[in-house]
Length: 205
Image (cartoon, rainbow, N blue to C red):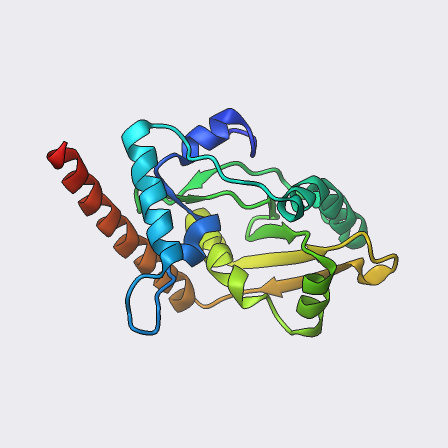
């Protein structure tokens, strides 16, 4: 049975695994083709988790805390606006790629994942002015779709500090099969490298 998001059991399910929320970092390379510092940091964190069996703690700043606290309100606002009820979702492992999984904020019907972001107002306005899903969140959504085997994503940005209907906007996205496959391939390559480095560490101890 899938554990509720944020619970200790949920955190344990994610230990040592590449998750959808970190997919952008896993795919982050410099123009030279070398891994970025963010990708290398993720690799080392997962190595540490595999060696210890414990989740690496992450610093939560005031903006991140705000987003976490506002997520229930974002979900409620979406349900009121659309009349669509969200289904809670825990950690879902990819059916074929070991140590790869994702935790959509919720599921919709039988074919969609739901992801809500509650950013700073400046970020919310910037996203509102641009069409489509923000590029920085596409890897996460693609990974969620790959793991859940669903075909479309519903992305929501919510800022209750804006006292009008503009406090929320909704973007629906149905990527191609090739876009989802490219993220799956990136996950396979990242995890292959992770496995190799883990074995090298274990053998050197």
